[in-house]
Image (cartoon, rainbow, N blue to C red):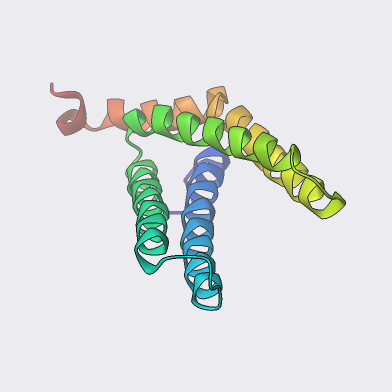
Length: 139
């Protein structure tokens, strides 16, 4: 990524990287919280952490695809943002003011990500590089 990278592509890369880091932090928080809890089993907590870490790795691969300007990375980016919206709505549906506030923040992040994903400028940034590189288009 250099200074000629269009801002929508930079934003999508940063968005994906931040989501991946957030999932890693959440998985670590689950592990730390489970250590002090009597009601959780080590096996269940380990599997839960593994799932979140796997999702973080997949989002990291998505971020790598965006860095390479692979136009195929746009659809997984949009699917990821749709899941962020679903998570935000689920958290917003919870009890308590703080829970609802966190849900709103997650919803805003997800909706902004969806709008970014549908941005024609992002599509153009991904397609322009693919058409300039004959190895990627198969010509």
